Length: 488
Image (cartoon, rainbow, N blue to C red; front, side, top):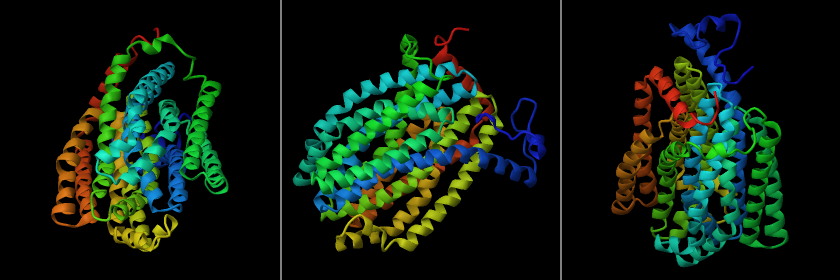
């Protein structure tokens, strides 16, 4: 059955289908329960493989942090700063730019304009590769950048050396990220998960070999990351060229046409994602200015690492709801888009509460896998309650961003993120952390308030959305970004 078809055929579910293939208006609890079940099946068919892939990808960075963390606290601080600041700074921008591919490919696939997908993919490769070249100085000059941000010289120098070594990984984002968006838009998600699983297994073996057997330390960790990232990218490209015959029709000069409209949506996407992703980066930088900076940065980084595991699961849901919304808008099914959003938000909230309970139960022990340092383990345990509350917030946040990506609302969300995060959350965190002398707890608590305001604002936007108008906007966007790409 085609993944962009919203409803199950036959049986009681058929009564929920209107003549145009969309849902009929739901009336009463019984019909709502049926829709809830149908949308649950549709979402998780897409979400689970993507979630596993994200978990495997995040596992590559997380296991690297674990291996390096047992080399020493300075090494842990160095790699934490690279992942939390330098890589986040660049990756956030690249991920945002690639999100335009997810919007346009998903809507084109839903509308049946499958030939556009390959052209959108090639445009994204061009735009992201050019962006990666412009962003290279961030990696090359990581050490002076970190010193300028007030980080300790010894940590910044070690981090700078590591940053230069992982440039190949960064360049792989130019092709890896758009290719993933291309495949997700068509719900070709199982192969992504399989590639991620193999990559994680191989990566762990390389970490053990290069760090401990060959005694290469941070250099070995960087080599493992580069080899794994390039391997994943090549595997995905081979699959696209060899098996995606509908969406991929070879390289074409048409990819250069209508590229400006694509660039504008990419930039709006980049701003939306960057304002979100850079939020935690700034939190880590501010923690580096507190007393006993090594413990402050390390304890926060361990918590953010654990939060990242949960976040990767919900980023899978983010991708799934983006695919569902974009496909259904392309199909001109406003109710299916709306109902899938409501169902996914509710499910994610309940799952977030489950993860919160898990953290509260294990908060005194989960730092052991990252470090042997007792003071650091105690510092991490003190942040357990904040981490638990963050788990709930981060269950809803990715879902809302997925809706925004699927609907093409990137510019609106960028404004909301700027206000909630940078005009409210960060200033409040600074006041609590420094003026009120609450340290890391104050910094994190303030930024959590900003995230809460963002979530409430976006939930209000979703509640007020006219989904019929969103269908009309999708049709206009497809005309602007693909008018010269496919001959009638």
